[in-house]
Image (tube, rainbow, N blue to C red):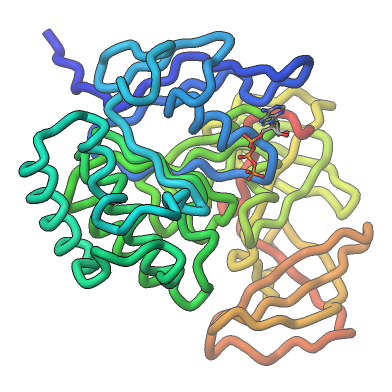
Length: 365
Ligand code: ATP
């Protein structure tokens, strides 16, 4: 008999409509114990609505929600083993930090002595003991964030839901706070579900990254998989550094290669896990900017000429922006010592190895 490890959260076909508009459309997700999950996607794709359904702040029209193996779809928030932290932190303006942090235990009607003890432990753990008697108006953004987190964590929930939790912080603080939160999550073993539209946050924090678009999940998996093997043209273009090509299949070979005709030329792409496309089918594929070379060999089948229009720097990366013959943009990244050979205005032969291109599994939208 196989024993199924208990999941912290399971969503089965969640659907949420507002009038005629579908905000969440059949979202299914399984979150194992103690995972750090990031819901990533553009504004309006349904991330927050999904989170609010998990929290019990919205009731889905269809589908089931299970927390720790128990169905909670229609249970109120306080009967779910969760806590939530909002972007604006939603602190109570009139309450001191100590009262604020103990509020969840007060709601659970815990004895006063126990609340006082737990509050002082949690304030110490979050290094905000000195702020115990202050009110939110006198705190900095970083301090408010700690108070909100301490308040959420004091009940030791199974799952912590975080909606853009560092969006309100100064840019300079974000990296430190992200690291602290990641360590806290690992130490406590509480599952974090973190909503963000910022891919850097999602890729550096998430054990599991769930990419949403138009109310649905487009792809879910570890960060490396989403970066290296985007399943759809949407995921490839949403993730920084991909070059997306759209075209039509003009041939397939027995060794798993697909020939695609695009407005920029014909290219060979490995089929890999994608279904075998038929000749004439519309497909898309992508190549990462760092996989492009400006010294393609004569034998390399994937080559094109393009004109450099700009050069940008991202830390040690030198990104060249090219205009393809069909007017589309192509990005090519060079690192460190390689840098410094191509200048704007120059037309260059570019290419990439067949195995560095990824055929998308769904027909392009
Ligand atoms: P953002 O990153 O901008 O917060 P999101 O991915 O979290 O976006 P949601 O807040 O889940 O998106 O919203 C999804 C869609 O549902 C949006 O088009 C939004 O306008 C709509 N929506 C959300 N709540 C309501 C509501 N109460 N009534 C009507 N439409 C709503």
